[in-house]
Image (cartoon, rainbow, N blue to C red):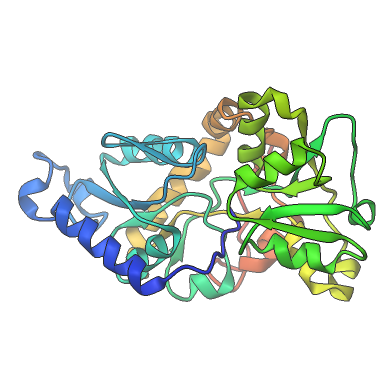
Length: 310
């Protein structure tokens, strides 16, 4: 998810440290009979993958010692293939990133957007999926392009990068809310025309709150020329997610990326996206700029992003 909320970084790190201490991280907690291949992955505790996660259904939720949701199910599948037991550690979004960058955890998941700045402080896997520009709209209304948004009442959550995009739309009025519920409430009441949120959040609300009478639509991404003229329009484009690992976790990143790529080919990724109401054509086919963004940065010049239908 495109989450860039203004969070107290120091507090987040403290919370994460407390969580790590409470959960324990000694060798005594390691599973018995760990294979040499699994141990060679270099996790903090052999046979265990420690995961910093923020509850953000339906992408990530913690139930007991399990992480569920789209990202959780993907990591569970991958971990089983690699012989790893998952140990979730609940924090906030800033704590997720800080835990990885300080190597207190092995990985964080939950729709984390790849960026050139973040990859300088950690490692990203190949994209488990791509997040399309989704809109919550009132039933019967249709909006396709940025031009269709001109002059409308547009909502999103405070601190999300869509705030910048909305502010760049001519004559549009921004409505920023503390959480997604505020967006949905005002959308259902007719005080907002379009809500910009992560797609699975909209799809879940559609099912859980039919009284709102909302639909999920996907914005046609702005052209390169439009983004050049209005740089903040870039946040109306699809973005690539990734699982995020410490810089030194090269073996683990490569192993997880290989399993992610295999899931595109064997149908598992498509099955999981459908399970949570996503459209595989939207979630599992990369935009052209996905490859160019990472080639020569944290991927080889000939890197091809994973995709279905190839």
